[in-house]
Length: 221
Image (tube, rainbow, N blue to C red; front, top):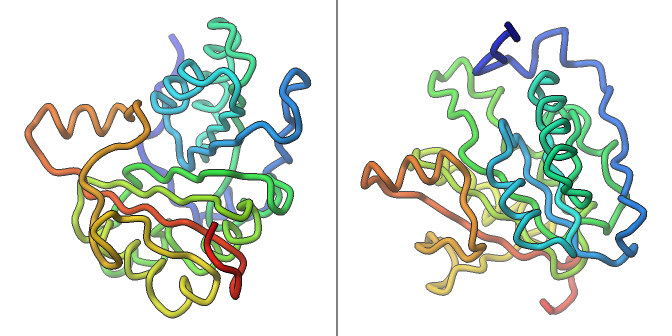
């Protein structure tokens, strides 16, 4: 019987600190300018599978720190014939910069990251200066970052990171219809992660933020 992957791992443990993520290889049937969506910390990949199925003209990439889940998702994608769906390993605090070329990603999706509530675990949280700088490098002009959580404090921290001085200096701007420093109420992507479906089935709120990116000093597209 296959061992069940661990539910959580410590991204700062010695086993994960050495950079080992590999560059994503684009499927040969997709043109270089095909839109690219990336799910960060994809777990079992429900969002990535649904997005790749709905948009066969897009490259969809699911990145995950648990290697067992990466391999399981790869096997499932092959079984389903989803040639536009790629999975790979990454530690979002260490080696995302190794995965994509500059200006090659259209959207990053960070969905329901582990909250790490304890103060002493704050350094393990996903949204970090390294992550913001790396995404700003890898996004195409007019690209987007999408963050969703069922934990208000986690979503608020993301909002503070992207709309604070560093996020603004890097070129991020709110895409909320209600203006800066507000949450996005609806899911505009047509597909949802398993965690989002469970959260909504319980009648609970999904806290969502969306940010566009343009090179600092440029007018937004």
